[in-house]
Structure formats: C-alpha cells, structure tokens
Image (cartoon, rainbow, N blue to C red; front, side, top):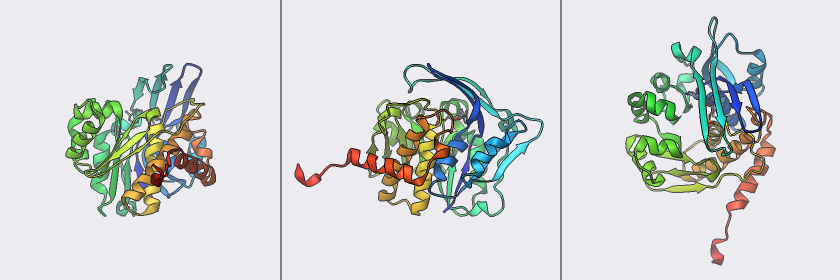
Length: 305
Ligand code: AMP
C-alpha cells in the first residue's frame, strides 16, 4: 500500500571534522521517501524552487517515487539547511535554516491521494502538517516527526498536530524538551497523554524504543565502524519504518517490531555516506542481508537460561 509523505525537500550543506559538502540533496521528505520506497510505493508532497536540479528529481524518479505532489515555484529558492558535526556525531549544530519556498507553501494532495491509508508527516512546519491532515479523508494511520526548531517555534500548533496523529517519532533530547521529563520512558509516557498512541524515541548510536500504553520494544542501533554523516538518519528510520508497516498492512505489534528493525537498518545505510548517496543505491537484497544480521545480533535462546 502506498504511503503519502510530506516534508522538506532541501539543499543541505554539511560539515564534519573530515569533510564538507555543499548543496547536496537532502530534506526530511527526501530521506523518508527513499527509505520507504524499497517496500512501498511513495507519494511525495513538498515544494522546491526554480534552482532545484533535474538531476535530483531523477534520483526520486528512479525509485518510482510519485512526485505528483511536488510543487516547483518559479522565482523562489529551495529550502536550505546547513549543519555541523563535531567529533561526537550525536551532537549537531544547525548553522543555517532558510525556509525559502516553505514560507508561503500550502501543501495540496493531488486527486486520489486524499484517500491514502498511510500518511507520514515528516519533519516540517507543524502548520503544514496540519494542512495536510485536514485534506485526508479515509481515517489514515498517521505518523509524524518533528524537531527542536518547531518545538520551540510553534509549540501550540504542534500540540494540535499531536492530538490528531497515531504515532510520533522523536529523538531523545527533543522528547525531554517536549515532555519536561528527564527519564526517557517517563518522557515518552507523557507524549502518549498528548495524543499519539505510539511513540518512538530515537537515541542515535544507542538505538530506539517504541512505547504504547501496554507495550515496549527496544532495538539497538546497527553497529557501524564507518559512520560518515548522520544527516537524515532519523528521517530514513521513519521512512523505512513506514514503508515496512504499510507493506505489512496493519499495526499489529509484530509488524511494529519488524518495522523498528527495518527502520534501524535503513538509518544505518544513510550514516555510511554523505547526503543520499547510499540510500538511493540500495536493493532489497542488500537491505535484507543487513536486516537478518541485525536480527541475529539480538536473538537469544529463551529455553536455555
Ligand atoms: P535528520 O538528520 O533525520 O534530523 O534530518 C536532517 C534533514 O532534515 C536535513 O536533510 C534537513 O534538510 C532537514 N531539516 C533540517 N531542519 C529542518 C526544518 N526546520 N524543517 C524541515 N526539515 C529540516
């Protein structure tokens, strides 16, 4: 089943201690769509300026991502983000966020997309997330991501979005910020009171956990010894998670658990290259091999203790 994904489509400039890239393809919707596309058809909603290149559109096209919801605005510029990592890849500093085309954007679902059953609101202005939600007609399963920029900048609108979504992806520092709790499980429990019935807390190299009212699932991160650039890891996790869940067709706990491992695997591929270099060149076989290795890493024989 296809997944509608709305979020940023961006030019990213990234600095790490060893390397620097300028205006590479990025954006929450781009990473999430590429990650989801290996398991489910994707319908992307977003906006770019006239400076966006055909080469980048082709990258999405080649993965059969339907860009029927991608608006191109003449006379304006694509969203631009610049970030810097120190020696600890979990510590990131945002240097520039130029919303550009996103300042005046109103997402519009192309005809037929409003009845989609799976909707992922990737990290973007919560007002746009709300606009998109208002157009959905078929009581879809809705996941949402956000970040400190919006938690600080638009807390009220974000609270309104949270009341209407089924699932929130959020990282460790942001869940603390949003809930006011320091302990992560307590923080996640606070989020469950705000609306979503599922919350997924991402902890970078320390993995992720999923919490509902009556269940908890924990996964480590895939161990990497060649991490180059973590940009987009969270979006890839969420996109991979959603692609897996939509392919499974329902949100039973066994599917949520599998989607957690699948999302972890997609995030790990993103970290091994700059921009979308790795995640755009995968095959399902390559993904499956790492998925199986990941499952083996945590498998234990219950009967033998
Ligand atoms: P992640 O590393 O998963 O948190 O996502 C990084 C991506 O998010 C980059 O490709 C950025 O272009 C995009 N991004 C950064 N800040 C924002 C923002 N305020 N709104 C939407 N997307 C953003």
